[in-house]
Image (tube, rainbow, N blue to C red; front, top):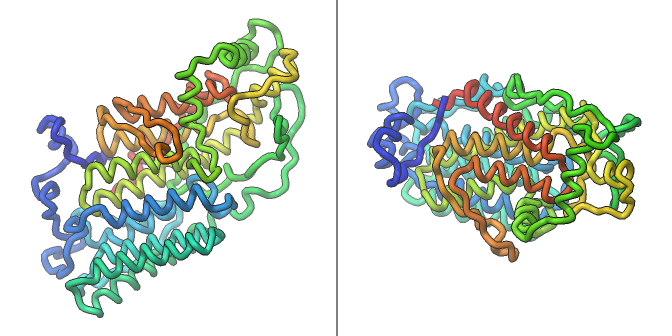
Length: 452
């Protein structure tokens, strides 16, 4: 089910009709949830608030992602998925004709219910859920950043408690906290606690081995066994085996390694810029690969300033897509265990001093994380905002990396994928298949999850 929702003046009226938007949404006039007798609900609808709560927490979550030491609890897409779900569930009782994801998500049950005869501020509920979620996933961040979580939560409480009774404010906050507790309890059982257990990689021709210069051991070898947020989201996305390993000149495997080497010798300034723009190593000045796409969402929401219901839906949908894309990626990585280009080029091609522009991360090459994540994210963002949404990604401008402009999310996704070939850490056929894999995951999610 497509959930495109933001009205852009350059789009034709037929576009609005195709996504089921009525004038009420564009005017912020939605009234309530899909529960019975919505007219009896005394609470202002979630759509009566702007996106500020979601945008503020997205911005802080990206900062936390950049500056918090990486641990299994906050690795890559997992916090985005669960936090987005908590924010959405905390406010969905105030969303007209929308439904909870309980019973749709894999094993999520037992969420609290709101008393529809009482007043709630759904902005306060979402704020409480998002604060609690970030406190959980980034518990090991600095005291200064933990204080920033507290400050943002408190500032939003002051803003959204104005004009409502103390009882309504307290009730709203408690509901959001209860939702977060239920979602976080569910998250703890997803298998991630053992995703980094001891692992001995298989050995043999063409198989992954720790790569120069760090020669680090395999990272998160069992992440692919984690419970998917949506059962069956990876169905039909397996890219199949890579080309058969060979060191024979002209063979498919040798040819794709030769291309990586040749690019490294003739790489243009534009190719270098693309590789560095999408590098996304969490080093304090850049995001993780899924974080980069969350940054794009945050920028789009700032630009469009939709109602809060629309922003929280987008937050949840992108987070779920990113999380399941990464689980499926790691399943493939440790199923096929393909070596990195640097290992092949140094060994089979007799270039022992060769280094990639970007250091290879410590896990197998196939599938490609950037490819799957970007294929899934681009498809999800297209479902949300349309196939011809032009945007400029300025996420890294504060860190001295020039903005890049795109005519669509798909174009950005393709560039993100090929950046890893330019960076020397992936083979082109891997990227091509991984983009398709990610797109299929997003399409599966769109077919299975019913937000409305």
